[in-house]
Length: 310
Image (cartoon, rainbow, N blue to C red; front, top):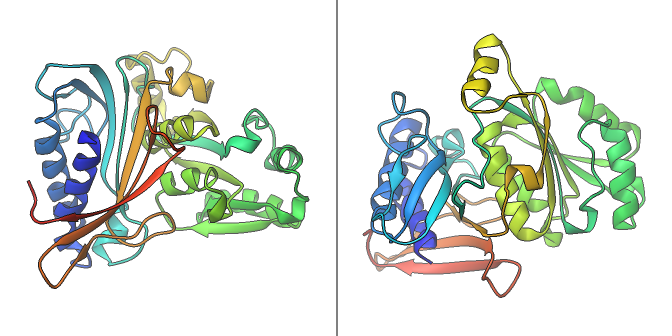
C-alpha cells in the first residue's frame, strides 16, 4: 500500500500539466512526488530502471538509493509518467507505473530498444520470440482454443512494424494499433475483458522490464531481446554486465523472483485505467491497478479520494 501511495501521488502531481504542452514539466512533477514519497517508506531500495543515469537525471536515476534504509532490500523500476507526450497533448493512456521486487532480481536493462513478445496466462509457455509472428499466432491460438481469425494482436503504430501488421492481416487476425507506451498493452494480454491476445514489437527496454514484472504477477508470459543500434549501445550492455547483449531473455530471466509486485495509476483515461479527476469539493480521485504476491485476487482496481498531496 505504500507503493500504491507513491503511484497515486505521482499521478496527482502530474495532473495539472495535462494538455499544457510541457511534457518535461509534467515528468518533473511526477518524478519529484514519487521520489519524495518513496523516501518515507521503510525499505532499502535501489532504482534499477529509472529516469536515466546519474549524470542525465536529477532524481530517480539508475542506482539511486531510496527509502529510509530500514526494512527489506528491493529493486525498483519506475516510470513516473509513461506517455509524457500523451499527457502534454491531453490524450489518453498516460499513467504512472512502479514495479518492485526482491533485491538483485530485476534485469538491469539499458535505455535502448527491446524486441518484445507478451501473452496472458492461458498462452504461457506457448511463445517463441525467435519464431515468426505467424508461428506464434498459431501457437497462441491453439493454447487459447481460438481460431486464428479470432486473435487480436496489439502492435505499436510504427513503420518498423509494418511486416508484423502484414502477418496479422495475412492470417485474418485483428490488429489493435497504439501510438506509444506498451506497458498497458502487455498487461492487457492478461486481462480477459480487454480482448488482447498478443503484444509484439520493438520498444523501450526499461518499459519491457516493467511490463514483464506486471506479467510475472499476473501469470502471463514475456520474452525480450535487446536491440543495440550501434557499438556504443552494445558496449553499454557489456558495462552493465550483459555479456551477450543479443540473447533472448525469458520472463524468469528478466524477473528472477516471485517476490514482486506492480502498481499503475492513471493520469489520463486509458484502456486499463481512468485518469485523475478533481471533484467540485476539491478532492482528487485516482484509479489504480495493483497486482503481486500477497494480493488475494490476481489483481485489484482501486479508486481513491485524496484531500491533498503529501
